[in-house]
Length: 402
Image (tube, rainbow, N blue to C red):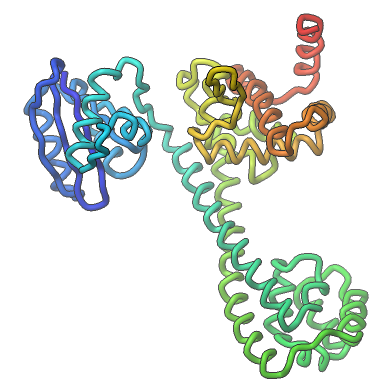
């Protein structure tokens, strides 16, 4: 058995091999190409009989390098980068070769306590990737929406009051058609009715009269030069926002299709308030490998819902867990927020935490921690959410707590 430390990078990877007794076996670099990775495979197999005997330790759990190692049968052990930082010498010396050596050395001494990477099924991998990419698109939508709002406030603030939401297709189409207050005031009620009918507004006549009245009322108006300049910028923002919103919609359709085709989807779809966005994200973050988690506490730590004890002398308190899977933590946090609005027991629990002096986010994390235990039992037993089961267990447990 050999221990392989891999300091990965975009263009090349530093490799360091140690034997069981800590003897250096090899130290080399390979480029991040197909040929380079084949060279890595060949060099590793020179020291072992089978790939299973070459344990690979690196600071990532995804990417083409990890995929190559797994496909060729090499055990992969992902390490948190902070683990390597803690093991550096007091001098703070750092290089790719030093990091590769540290990874191999940590693996040699601690591999029995480390968890081997067991990748998700292809179904879950695709669902997780789609959800993460959609989150990136949604961040861009938020950024552009905020910029568009700020732009309209500078020269055309009444446009923000004409429709219920700025990102509605009819709102963006209105801004394209009437980019300035002057252009909008030239439209008659009949023209507004025709415009709204063309964009399938549910009440075109009433909405047209309301919009016309708002436009004709006294408004704060920018100077013509400012209006011309800002309207140009506004049209650029709208042109970027419209295809993004369409892409988000297409992602929703594909994520929903993939989610519904998974056998565990009824479990997560049954969660109150999860909806079309959070249910797929909870499944993607949780996975479908029943052997992955030892118990619910492991998921709570992985998702960052359970607090971390910090104690030094008489100083003792619990703080938020920072080392966790951020994607799953965010999904659980948002789900806890929805459940606090829709589920009576969750709302009561949230209010009790707030009354005890917890902040909004602390109360939501505590609620999410409860939900992890519930979801873990649902997931393990392959049963959808049944509130009566939870309430019965809670009533049974209450006397013991008292």
